[in-house]
Length: 485
Image 1 (cartoon, rainbow, N blue to C red):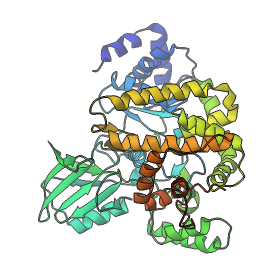
Image 2: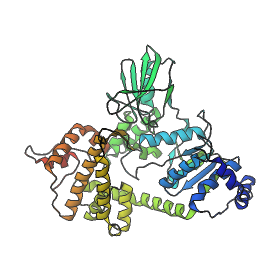
Image 3: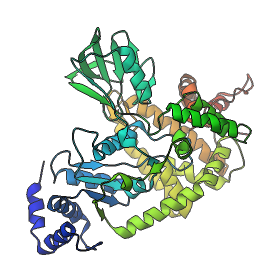
Image 4: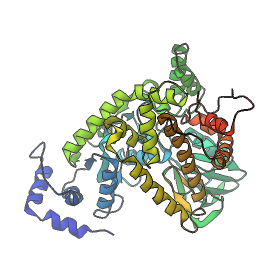
C-alpha cells in the first residue's frame, strides 16, 4: 500500500519545507533536525521527493535499516527504495557472507552504476556497518546470468557461466548458490529468490522455467518468463586472482597456520569459504559504498550519536577480534581458552542469540543478562512453534535457505545439545548428553561430514584418531570438532 498522500502532507509543514529547500539549494553543508523516530521515514520520503538528488539513509543497526526500508517502501514508488545489507560475518571468521546477502548487495550496486534496467534507486538505506565494510572495486560491473524463455543457450555455456558466477555444481540443488544439470534440465538456486528454479530445455531452446520445492524437488505451478542468477560471491576466482594467490601461496608456504594452504586452494581455482577476508591482497583495490554513490548524494543520518557509537563499537571489535577468534579455535580443539568465554558464548546461543550477541555479552560481562530467563523464554517459544500441527512438514523461510520444519528442528537440537555440553563442561557440571539425541547427531554429522569440515564452524570436523572403542558421546563430540581431554 502506497501512502504518498502522507508525504505531501509532511512536505507542507513549514519547518520540513524549509529543510527540504535548504537541501535542494545546498545552502548548508550540514543540517541538524530533531524528529521523533516514527516521523523519520516520512521526512526521508519527503526529502527524496522534494530534491532531485539521490538519498543515502544511514542507521545504526540492520534492524533499523530494514524497518526504515519497509516504511519508505510504502511511502515512495515501487523499486525506488533499496536496502543495502552488511555482511553478517564477523572480522577474521573463516566464513563467507551468505549468498543471499551478496545477491542483494550486488543488485543494489548494479543499479547504482547503471547496469540494471530498473535504473538508479531514489533512496538507499544502509546500516553503518555496511558503510564501513570495504568491498572489491567494481562489483557493480559483475553482471548476472540471465536466462529467458524462448531464447537459445548451450547448456554447457550456461553451466560454465554459473560456475564463473561462483555457483557450486551439485547432484541435487538444496541451497542458494547451487546448480545441477540433468540432461535437458538445469536446476539453479539464485541467491535473491525464495525458491530454486528449474529450467527445461528443448534442444538448445528454453521451453519453460518453474520454481520448485527444496523439500521434495517437485515443481510449482507458477512459471517465470526469465531468471536472473546474480553472482554468489563478491570475490570471484578469476585468472588474475589465481595468479596472485599462487604468488602468495609460495610466499607463505612455510608460515605457521594454514594461510599458505588457503592461497594454494584459491590458486587452483577453488572458491574457499572465508576467502573474502583476503580480498585486499588478491584484487586491484577496495572501496566503500559511499564511493559508489553519485557525487551529489544527500546523506541522512538517523540518530547520529547512535551511529557514531555503533561505528566505534565495530572498529573496536575489528581490532580486538583476532585474538578472540584464536581463543575460540583453541577452545574447540581442546586448548586452554578461558572458561569465561565458553560460558558466555554458549549461554548466549542457548538463549536464542547470535554470535554478535555473544560478543556483546562477553564485552560487558554475562552478569548483566538474566540468561536463565532468556533461555526459558526461548525454549517455550520454540516448543510452541514446533508443536503446531503440520509445523514439521511446512517450509520455513530460514535466513540461510528455505527448509522443512523438521530440518530446522534438527538444527536447533544440534545447537542445544552441543552448546549445552560446552556450558556444562565450562562450569564443571554433568556434561552427559541423552543417548537418543546422540544417535540422531551421529547420523547427521556422518552424513554431512565433508560439509562440516569445509565450513570451518566445527574446527576441522572428525579427527580420524579416535580409538575403535570410543563412546557414542565421544564420537559425536569428535565429529563436531570438539576434542575433550
